[in-house]
Every structure is written in structure tokens, then in C-alpha cells.
Picture 1 (cartoon, one colour):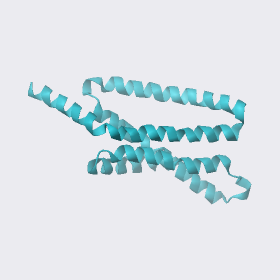
Picture 2: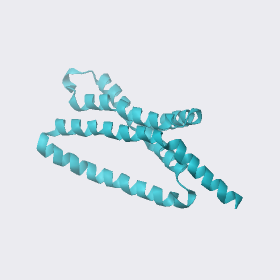
Picture 3: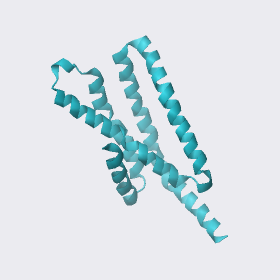
Picture 4: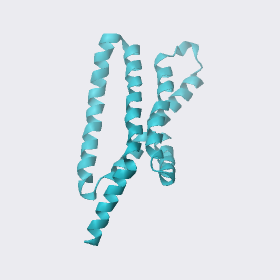
Length: 156
């Protein structure tokens, strides 16, 4: 739900005002923290399974809003001749995160225990949210710089 719905909402917000897209990405990341913390720390024996389902849906939806939207941002601020490199780096960094993240979590589990380690890892989403929101500070300027550069190429 988050990938498709986030893409549609992201496009609408971007069309209204560009800086709203990074705000959506950052705030959706923040909104994913409480349901994820609930899932990590809940006493499942004392909860209705439907509450667990609802929290799972909320966490999954919020966590998947950013993926497609960040790719759109990258597309809009990088020149066509460098996009392949940029997206190659994005894929590598994404894969490194998928490999290093579990390694780091396993290390933290050994130090702090499972529940504490996953709680700390989830709170790191707040740092990601800060970085995502900070994109708003330069997005319009970066896009305009690219558009000006492309316009000069067309004129030449």
C-alpha cells in the first residue's frame, strides 16, 4: 500500500510544491517508528491479533512510502548522462545496507539483547527522516540548476 499510495501522494504533493515531497518521505519514515516499536515490544499474548495486524499494516505502509519517491528525486536532480551511475550507486548502497544492517543488528543483539537491539535500530529511522526532510532545503535549486543546464544543451 505504501509504495503505490506513497507514489501517487508524492506526485500530487510534488506537483503542488516540490519541497512537500521530501517532507512526505521524512514524515512517513517517522510515522513508521511507533507501530514498529509496538511490534517489537508488544506482549503478543495480551493483544488481539487484529491489533498486531493493524500495526503491521501501519508499519509496512509507512516504511515503503520513501522507496519510489527517493528514486523520483534522484531522477529529477541528476543529468541524463550520469543517471546510470547514480542509480548504480543507489543500488550498491541499498545492497550494502541489506547486508550490513543485519550484521550490525546481530552485533547489537549480542550486546543488548534482541528486543533492545531492534528498538535501537528502529529509532535510527529518525536519523533517516532528518536526512530525507533536509532534501527540501536544496531540491528546487538542484532541479532548476539541472533544467538550466539541459536548456543550454538544447539551445547549443
